[in-house]
Amino acid sequence: MRKIIHWKPNVKTTAFILTTLLTMLLSGDVSGQQKPVTGYAPVNGLKMYYEIHGSGEPVVLLHGAFMAISGEWEEWVKELAKTRKVIAVEMQGHGRTADIKRDMTSENFSDDVAALLDHLKIARADIVGYSLGGSVALQTAIRHPEKVRKIVSISAAISSGGWVEGVSDFWPNFTWEMMKGTPAEVEWKNLNPNPDKFPEFFDHLKATAMRPYDFGADKFKATKAPIFFIHGDADGFRLDAIAEMYRLKGGGNTHGDMQPRPESRLAILPDTTHVTLMNRMSIIVPMINDFLDAKPQKQ
Image (cartoon, rainbow, N blue to C red; front, side, top):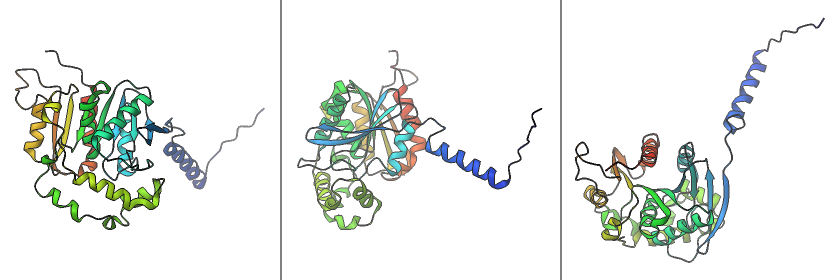
């Protein structure tokens, strides 16, 4: 007759088991989380780094200036990847993508996005961009309409004239030395293949920031993709400029209870700046998902 042994774990054993399980959960061994697919796409003279997270409908995620797929932005990637396939990229000079001798313009960057989709054999995707990435997303809707289904632009405008007064005065006195020791500089040096060239990268990006731009109201109005404009009420853009972009996409002049609403949307978050928009992920991501999942309205 087999003897049944009743095991009574002590406190140390129980703690070890719980710690092991927690470690497995956080590492994804139990949760079933998959490691992202990573690679470098040869596009327009770049070796552009990208990561693919999750599954479902494709959405390209475009970071802001001096950012990469790290820190807060990495959390955005993971959150959006819960419901769709996220293709996160690091644009020219950012993160693991080396800089090249080419102007850093939204036009060039939008061409890179289109070429990346071709490289990945993705016919069309949604595009979500923040700041610099938002400008690139808007430009992609203009230059590559066949590649775009819907656009989410977070704190960006179609013209440098959309900034509030005084913003342009900041850049001439902004130097790379001011970024010494900041998380942005430290992370860039950790990721970039040319870690000693941060001053050159900074100057390249600064030249872009100081260059006036205008995508053209007529070209923007002609875009077919629905656009979700997301701004803070203190994010550096004039409210009338934000309203004008929304108006060009059919918004602002309808009574939604009496007539069809535009497919494009507008959200302005209270007490929110250009930078603190990144802290509003728990509010913004559900709104993005709702917009991307929305079906066309019956006219």
